[in-house]
Image 1 (cartoon, rainbow, N blue to C red):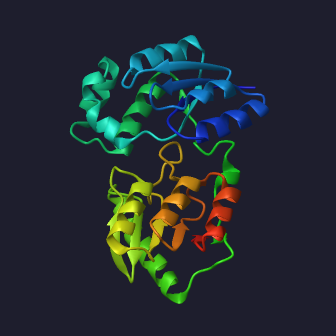
Image 2 (cartoon, rainbow, N blue to C red):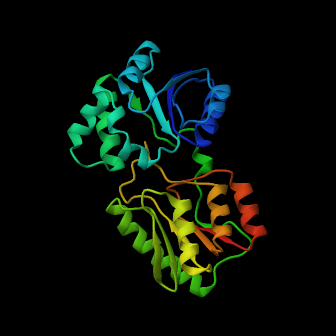
Length: 268
């Protein structure tokens, strides 16, 4: 049995992890962000502390008080919050941003925060701990596979997205006829898909990958039913995910939703 600190952002992943960790006999102490983390997470953890954005000093004090030596980071934090939140940062948080200068890339922030945790003897766990079954492996998940044209678009999209993710621009692109229609920015995958639908009227493919140097401790790409729904609304035809490098939440529901709407869901 271990005491694990869960730094929880938005979405279902924090709850999925908590259920599995507690079933394994671990004690889960959650550190949740007001206005970001789902309130019902409280039902699935042993204890929860609610913090304001940028209140890192209080969080660190609570980690020590709770005798936590291992933490895991799960759930989405909107990048816009990072860009807008400077005035709400406490002294410890401000120090992190001072150390990275004007660079507010995800990895820069996480790596600097990791140094703070390490200085307290706190280890950051791989974010796929207890979630390995959510990592999709190569293959076609839906009844409908790819046409030759769609396969070419997926291959092209994967090549482009890998380069973009290496530059920390985005991890998702929409492609039609070997032409990039939309590139993911800070708005996220679902909004990128919506934009592609507006620009094309539909019949495009979406490719999502991880960074070439993906650190599995944080910011692992996540896809779920909301992404499939966004593709349906935008009249897209294909969602292609990189094998072994991301999490697919509610796989059965996502596949059924794709099948019911004639969408191909593939892992490449």
